[in-house]
Image 1 (cartoon, rainbow, N blue to C red):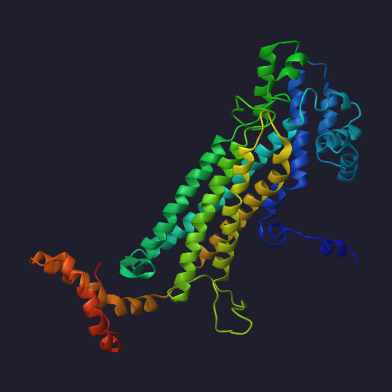
Image 2 (cartoon, rainbow, N blue to C red; image 1 turned 180 degrees about the vertical axis):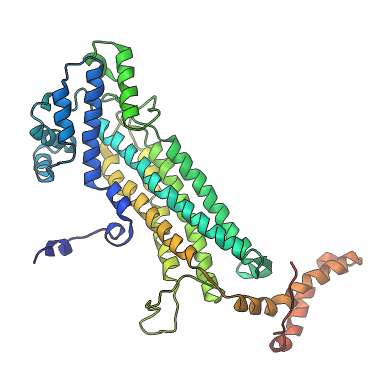
Length: 422
């Protein structure tokens, strides 16, 4: 059957089930390898301007074949060469015979590998940041709408003093605002690896330009600007410092912690019937219990957020074990941890936006819970009055423990309507 092979192998649910098309494309092979070709074109253009014997015809030939990658040929070349970059150099050269001698001229594999990773990280943040902004906007609207609706506060998940539904949402908003700051900073701090040699010394380019340091610096500046970066890292080994990956994924893991807390709160409030995530018209709450309205979106966010938080261990360990100018034990790990972090952050933000756009509040349920606890909350005011009258706070604090059992027989009669003043 046509397409049957697709169901005979593992597919990551982050792509097949969850993440957006734009984030899935951002980490796709097509995005990666067309970016490699763009970087080879940038390099050739800059080298030509600076005096190397490269022709306009060679550059035009490369540009005309920027997008038409023969992936089957590249896979076969990699099988033979055991080197992904050289496999794609050969594949590009095959359709650009005139330009073949100058493709990748003077560069090391990390010129395309690391610089492409930095471009993809930057573009990944460009996808996530507007999504986070939308979540903050929706929750801000929710907080304003319910700013004056009293609700029972909880500490230790035990009834405490009153707060408001809107004020509780502000706890979520403040954390999300911190995540926005962290992610924006990680985005803005990203630099280009630049045009550096096998150990970051630019020795190969100095040789190409016959020891002309100024031309080597101009080359890096020109390619950096063509790639859309303002600056390149001043110092690298063969790779850019893997601490950069730590900074990026730290901001996403922190977001994961925030979303987990928000969605856990929503799940707890859903159990109390005070708050509910959107529930579609044809949605099934339970196959056996049709009356149930499970907070499945919030549960999905919590599930994926745990994965996002756990992924931070990868770049931390990778950065710690890089030997001298580089070691290749970072590569396989980064192929998994970098895409999965952004793909996971992408889906939890999309899901949280859906939740925040359709949160349902049940004021009558909230009011009933407040009424049931008001007599017990009043004991704190009684204690304060007794202290003001000369009582001992360390003695009167036990009043609530003595009063509580006395009130239990009257609980059924406590359901009276009152006006609350905050």
